[in-house]
Image 1 (tube, rainbow, N blue to C red):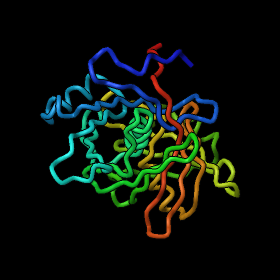
Image 2 (image 1 turned 60 degrees about the horizontal axis):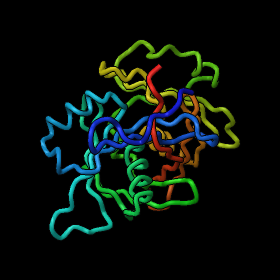
Image 3 (image 1 turned 90 degrees about the horizontal axis):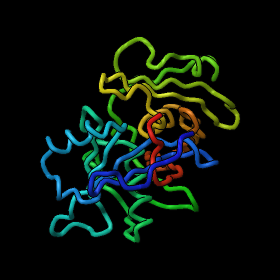
Image 4 (image 1 turned 45 degrees about the horizontal axis):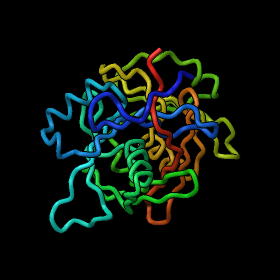
Length: 240
């Protein structure tokens, strides 16, 4: 893996993270975080910055409105081409970053709804509902080797989450994610929303190994929500 750049991008106020890193600290989906969303309030400007940065997602932390719960942070999530009501890795990454800065929150509020946050050792967890996940195709393959052999991206249109059991008894899954939006993100290294959707369909806790070296942990909750957890590290790999 290439050396990671410092957590700060060249642009003022942009923090760079890797979310859902593997047990060895490798892998992880790059994420850009703009902590001062008030500095870029126009949705068109946010979309332009997300497109320029080119990461799977860029998340903006918005200022609290009068009367807002101070432990609940409003957020806005953009891919290089679309705005999302919910996404997993931006919320896990932002929750981790705020805690590391001494500004922990109990919940985050993307457009889809309130997402509870908790921390357990080096894992950061968020709790959400499968109904919040934008539509995507989840397709099971016969083996992890078949998933690994897929071209990037596979033929077809629309979001594809390809998965297979690596060890069904242990709940270990091999997965890869292909946005197929035409915006330059050929493969998503780690996809919290798709992991949430798969967990909802299978009805069990999962240990998902995605991309080149990422790990996502999930578990269903009694109230119908699902927790998604993972490790976060500062910085993103330099371009090859």
